[in-house]
Image (tube, rainbow, N blue to C red; front, top):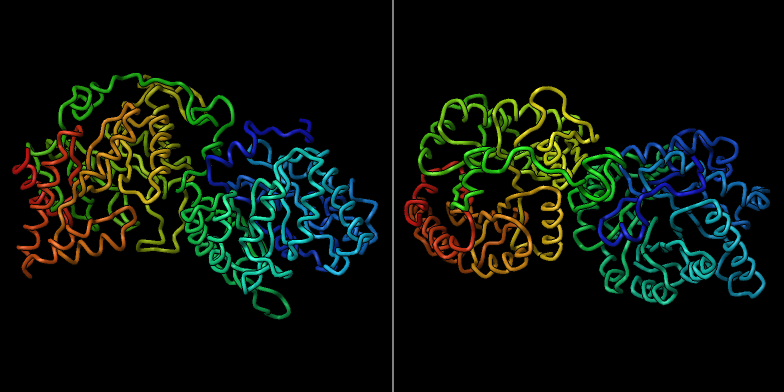
Length: 625
């Protein structure tokens, strides 16, 4: 393969506009940990020890980052002159890009990394030395672009004035430009520029992405991100792994990979488009960021499955059709296909080994609902396998199970194995979701896998329904396809409503035939959602949650993502008498009133009685339906 040409199926900016992206972490930290002394020229390793550099790149590629940066941070001629290597700019840049290309393959983009010249501001205001800085950046950037990078990344510029010189040098190239400053503890660059000033001045210079990296940890950079976002350019953050502490003469960074991932997700929610790592970060930090990005829709442009001939391609999903019509896949599917109003009631699997009490609750719903909706480790809590519990439901009751299937706990191999196993056990109805992160549950340090997100899993299941596995191969054997009914979730009251609709569009394109919403209390919220999804060929089951008590209402409102309980509803719960029975009765009344107002606008209802109190669901159904 010609390593000087990009094998990527899509241009960087095309992907960047539609998907959160993950950049790699520190290269210098990784090289230092492998025994390279700080007095050595790390850039020269591209010539004298290319295998070591490629090993570092591959570790980041293997955890799923979208962009790796070449080992050329200090390749400005003035910086190299300190090592007597100023005549090696082109050789180092060409080797660095070739190394990164080998590591990246067709799995991620390659960015040319450019750091400061090492000149001080007093030098840069002089015509002669400013010209030397500009010429050096121009030479370095030309060498990188000639070698075949996908984008340029300017990083760790403490002085905005020098970064402006570097950006000026990039005008000779047509690759996208990512420009990052380093902010100090006071939120300013060393030459006194505020984040908002940084954004405005870089925007005026025509950069494509603006951001900040190094010096501060993720918490520190998040404190300043709003000012950057206000400028209107896409924003990238690449923080350090917290503040370093000196231990035996060595700088150690204290931010754990788990914390780094949580803060990355917070950044994505604020509107940051890309997140990476700087000093002290490594592949485990970036693995957590990749998981956070997948939960926010990242990684859709390429999956770690295959770039060609795959059901999960860069175009979301190839055109495959189910072998079995919807009405023939299950009784539930038949009702959906016929346009009948359907009823689903949620019931968690037991936390221990005994299923007897849970099975009795399911039996109480026979003749009342069409399916029992069985979550998959809700709120990242430990419960019996919902597939195992669904099998007991099939064997011991007349109610069909509707099984949640989430990406959190399974890698790509496990996802396929469990889908095939569930089908063999007779399970036909799936709700495909990404899953709650472990941080919110019983074991916050547990590893979240997230090899795929919900659109990726829907594409996989849709392919299996067509008899094609994720690698594009036909399923072997006499029974050569699955016949799943494919549902997904949505939040009609999502704070970022436009993103929620775009996300749902991706899920429908990937194979969702039904959407089951988070609880809705306000008819206007539902109508807004229905209007926004009217162009989709999609059946809607509205989520209805009967509140058990005032305490239950307040907990859900303040602690559960996507759950917004209106003030008037919470007030009604607070005004109910102090008895448990009265508060529960008020919760049932509120839910029944909401369902009565909304049922004619949807194809079904998704009832979520709290604490397994199926009698509350039965009462609502009897009152309204």
